[in-house]
Image 1 (cartoon, one colour):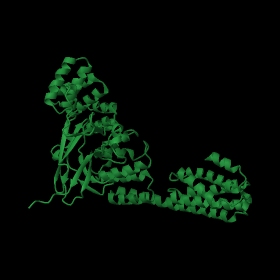
Image 2 (cartoon, helix red, strand yellow):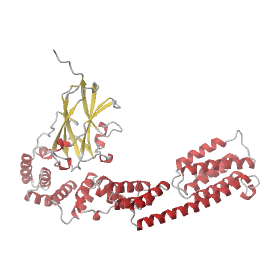
Image 3 (cartoon, one colour):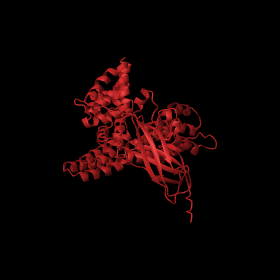
Image 4 (cartoon, rainbow, N blue to C red):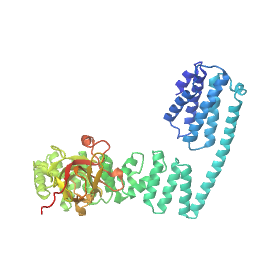
Amino acid sequence: MLLLAFLLARRDESYLRSLSGLLLFTTLASCSTRAFQWPAMVVLCLLAALMVRPTRPRRDIETAVLYSTILLLVMAAALALTASGDSARLLVTLAAGWWMTVRLATGRPGLTQLRWATGPAILAFVLLLWGWAWGDVAGLAERRAIQLVAEAHQEENRNRTLFLLQRAVKVHPWRPEIWNDIGLVEQRRSNTEGAFDAFKKGYSIRPGGKNPCLGGLAETAVLLKKWRTVVGLLREGGPPLGSMPREAAVPFAVELWRERRMSSALDLLKAQHDLSPGGRALAGWIASEMGDHRLALDLLSSLVESGESCGETIYRIGMASRVLGRERHARTVLSEGVELYPLHQGLRKANGLEAYTGCAHRVDPGGDGILLGNTVYLVGWEACPDPAHQGDTVTVCTSWAVAKPLLDMVMILHFDLGSPPRWRLNADHAPVGGNLPTSRWPVGEVMIDTAEVAIPSDAPLGTYKLFTGLWVPGDQESRLLPGVKHSHLIPRGEKRIPLGDIVVVAREPALR
């Protein structure tokens, strides 16, 4: 930007010299407000240059001052529309920029231009005084608002405090400090969801470790079990792993494991003094995946002795024994394990058995399935009858192989007619008939979900596309999506997993 201004200032045309001054001014203005962005400056500069470009070059001082004034008026309008903050500072910058533009456009000392620019100079002076006055008034109003908030806080009048802060944030929506205060008040009112929303808005303004909303956002995210948000915040410097509540350690470690931050997950679990059996199993699985098979055996063997093992634990013990050269022990453990847990995919594969699908159609022939969110595989599906008649009940079966522990999630099941859909049948439901929530699905095993969907008697005829998925209702970030390996199977912008087609035809009239 500065180099371009320097090159333009060396030209003879007055409008180009004016434009060079404008470029320098925008550089100065960008330092005065966060809201004024570089793309807007470039576009405004080009528009202003097109607006004032004369039919032929002119070199008289009066025209140069006119160019400068027009350019600065355009910039003043831009500042008025985009700036939020100290008006006095912005208008001082505006006056300085106008003077700089006149200086470069005419190539003469600034004081000699007053007799050609009396009007613009008086206008700049009035704007300067008005800006200072407005800044003082705004400053007094802000100090009064802070005083009122402090008084309401001392009186423990939380509703009035929240009302005053909400008024303040309408005036200064880009100040994370106000959002942080709103979040703290909402916490005192036991409104954790409201506090989370306030902290999240404040943090989005200026993400980073120095944002005052970071601590509150992390704390409320833990309380609301938004583990993906917590893991994202961990990269920004909070919350510390040591400050994680005991009841949050295991689900947070699961989310770290899901994000492939296995070392952090294992450190978090090892830091717990009284780890639950589920926590010990999780630590052993993670240690096994990291290649620390001795630690995995130490952690998991005690669970077998106490009768608190599962298919995944036995599978990890067998594989760790095999890696450590204990082949006979590994064969015994794995063969006994597949008899106890015949639906565990890892145990079946280790014993040379075919992977269990559970449904007629595989979604990834020759593979383990579509891995969603690095957590669960969608293995197969089936729908019958196909074709279906209007008024029929269609049974849809989907099979899932659990790779990591899940949150309590809802099964997505949509019947879409057309793309984009002109008619949709929504059959979202609790998995496994509501009898076994996803948080209790055993890791490593295949779970079968069966849903019976009634096709309305007036449903449009045609070929419907079936979509499925898993998500926590109300939390779009919780949707489990496929990784890079299977991303080609999902249409662009789609957040559901396509299964296949089912045809709906008209019901034949009954014979008399």
